[in-house]
Length: 223
Length: 315
Ligand code: HEM
Ligand code: SF4
Image 1 (tube, each protein chain N blue to C red):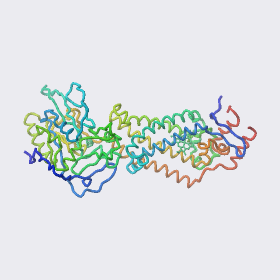
Image 2 (cartoon, chains in turn red, purple):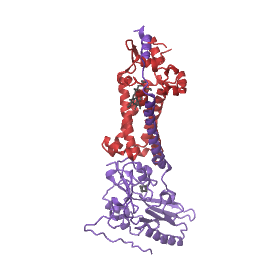
Image 3 (cartoon, each protein chain N blue to C red):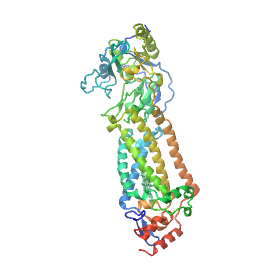
Image 4 (cartoon, rainbow over the protein chains, first blue to last red):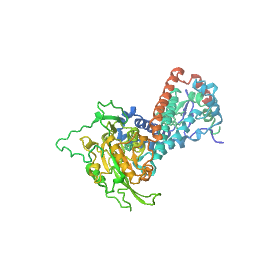
């Protein structure tokens, strides 16, 4: 049996406090390219989504420029997320304890960690974010291509474009909500942001939130 | 004969004064406008397909007035030229060879296609750019190119498949109903050029009255289904047709039977927007409230101590 959730680059450094390497430099760069693209997409998309936010086109050099650049950022996001997906998908596979964790969401939200099952590198909430983003990004890029009239206008009918534009808008709203959950969780659970900036967390953070992952790291390759 | 003149007077070429401006907007895309101080008389162009001889003088006049030259097209064995509306061709004669099942006669149907100037314009409803599409109180729907961002949403909003996006400047183009000519008391260039008066222009009331006479005439000649095309699904249009077979508009190169703004466009521009913004706002608000109520989820010294104990023995 291979290690449960341990990924390349994860390792423990004993000390006071213990530090745990969580993300490699490559994973972090990959993450922040993805994050930047999604934020820029959300801003440029919202500018065209509702008149009250049209002023945001100013950030991109006007309406024409916003319209032209938005789909290209989407292409960057797609390939960049593809990279994240291949780095993280294995550790995000659904595990036995995830159902229990989900069922105790009330304890999660009130920070009663002691009532939660020990989880691996990611908890069920993070996994939902991961798979939700994965699916939504595929939906967004496919519906986006259908309404990318500058290059693909002749390939679909107007009726198909109408369907695509509704799906694109709905998926965009959903991914922004997923993104809010994601960012909020990173802020609320103190000590998390360092995972994606410095690449490491403290042992106490890992003990508190991802104990099974920590135990596997300490006990060596086999779980 | 209805009380209007087929021949509109020639313009005053000395310093013509435009009498149509932003003060006459009744709708402006992605924004609101103050109620206009005056209500212009609604105008309309009436296209009597039974009188059209397919000479394309209107197409030529449109190019001439708007100072556009489309590329020389390819002959595909049909009279339609070009094959479709383009950013330079705001109006297009569409030819259909139709065998009337009742008489077995081959009827050559010719319809002048172009913007219908809907009372409830789907293009304007879909447009995300403030002021890129406007509607005047006389009914003319116009694209304001300085504000156009080339997104193509008007194409999705239009029930008649009219707007075309230019590959040159990435802006949307369509028939203006010669708003610049109407502004100085003229009619559209196509109406001016039409040798048979198949295209006439005047107030919407006059045009309806004129159409009535034409319809009676057609009915007396055996076209019992002759009628006016002024589709109520889009609130009526400021370009209307007299059709000899008004019971089946589709035979005229796919003129929609009951055009209206697609329910998908209503959904996209209605519920999606408001529900969408509300849901995003709600998620953000829940985050803020949760943090205020719950406080940060901090790692305790005990957690660190536990980790040290666990990791302690190893290196
Ligand atoms: C701009 C604001 C963002 C911040 C502050 C942020 C922060 C973080 C942090 C701290 C982590 C590490 C969490 C952990 O390891 O437990 C993380 C992981 C991750 N982030 Fe972000 N992120 C942002 C935007 C995004 C965007 C836009 C995406 C994708 C569309 C994204 C996708 C991911 C994924 C897939 C992971 C891996 C963790 C998992 O699988 O659950 N992030 N992010
Ligand atoms: S026909 Fe199309 S482009 Fe013309 S006013 Fe109606 S919706 Fe707009």
